[in-house]
Length: 124
Image (cartoon, rainbow, N blue to C red; front, top):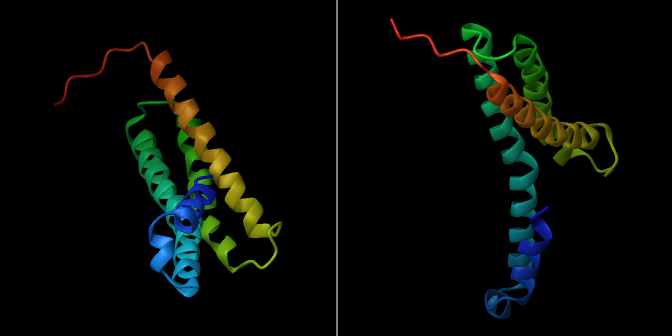
């Protein structure tokens, strides 16, 4: 996860010398919320849109679209982990599952694209 590297840069970079502790803490929290909230939502939007295309066109395996829909719902719920005080709470597990699910879904889509042997149909 890139957060510790960002925090190290804040702590030991030239910026930290002139910044107050409150500023550094605010930047750390903003980075945490961005990585916990915005990235899963962006992944969910990507997967849901791709799944819709797969269902409508049948370009890849249909079950892959339904798996993507489940992944998209997990990605939409993942930012709720910010509200959890427990690091092993329900939404934190959903957030982790959404991350792993995104990786698996992208891998499966890549395999489906490589295994596709049909020529694309001409546009009408």
